Length: 254
Length: 306
Image (cartoon, rainbow over all chains, first blue to last red; front, side, top):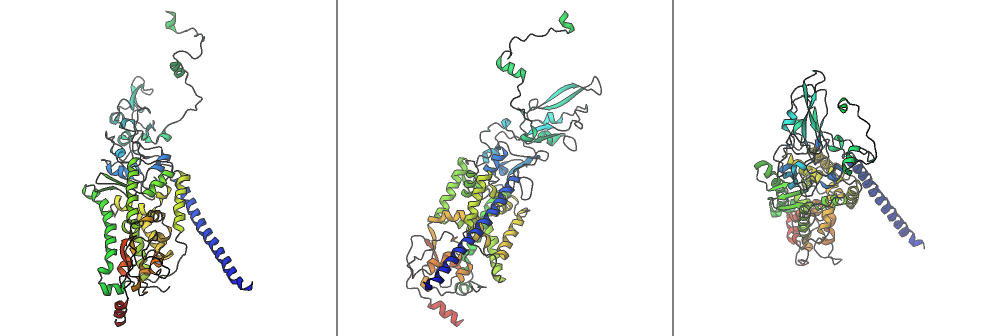
């Protein structure tokens, strides 16, 4: 079968070339894919100053849901929302705002959520007070004027949920003795993270800042139980038969 | 293959410049029109089209969205809301009718960049470059879907030149595009020096996806007067996917129909423009008639005289 040899060889060559080409393409594309995957992992961490629009899903879900169309940005009536640009710190094309520059003005009709076609901004958020864009944290007690004993109160006054998300807690001023301090105190169950407080803080660098919630909040281990909470929940002491120790305070003798 | 530095010269001589650039001009107008639609809003306050190519709202009523991005989002673990799904359905239906890759040649802003690179490449007589299969794009497409699934993010949108450039144009009001210009430059240089039709013709997963939508498209280009073909090769020189022409144009002996049915024909119509004997026409996929009386006499004669 001498005559078959060239054909046989060309067939082998063809097969070799096919395998080599396939390997070339798959390897090239796979390396590209790997790079893209790793890059996307890195792009997932949001810088602490960038806040998502109201109703945004958790960052991980958001990056799978937001198609970067920018319709929320278009329908934001304030210069608040912008799209992340290529080469910036925030995942390219996604909407965010920076509280110190332009906070969320908390429109009652929430046009950004209404504009979102995919549900990356959860339409279940119908009351802007339920939005959780971040959480305000009084980060610098050393420079906050209220902590220094001055009656600043600006963050408290501008808070859209005045007296709820930020309250002023009265305290004796340890330095001046009898004078009071009025300390702005954030309540995480009401704070929407709109950023008005950070924007208006009178200091050169804000003493109160809004961070993404994961950064702003600690988390107790699930094994911690608050005794008073458990007692309230049960309506009675969790352990019965505890004898109250006799009080030795002066008024007890009366 | 010898390079054809000035394809369409004969057609221009015979039909006039305008007729020999008709579809090209219409296509550029269409691409600029799409960008313009999105720019009207930010410039005048009348929101004709709001959003970007990824998803948009036309006249505050008609939602449109990119089915490829929706597919990635779905694989990333998110079920898009009704608005986005309706938008994707409308887009799918449209491209199934007119041809999937009509998106590439009539809408996509990258096409302007790569066409320019291709034009310059021809003028500068740059040959060769990296060679790889045109099927690579389907592998890239599969890769983007796999990466979306494994990372849970729409990862391709981090680098997708189509949306990055379009967003830059529309949200940066063209001049404020910033770093997106780098992407324009990268695609341009890739197509100019690295490989012939490297991006749109070999790598782009968006085009690959849309080509699949065009499987049954009604609108097609037909080589109805293929017997009049004088083998000048101009159509092959200008076609972004020249391999699609051969089966129809040279398929008479094998009994192949005259309609170009290949998925990757972008319906750009440039072959119609540059063909002096008017072999090509736009028609439907069912129009199988061949103009058997076509003879290339007139063109051959006029060329010999010239």
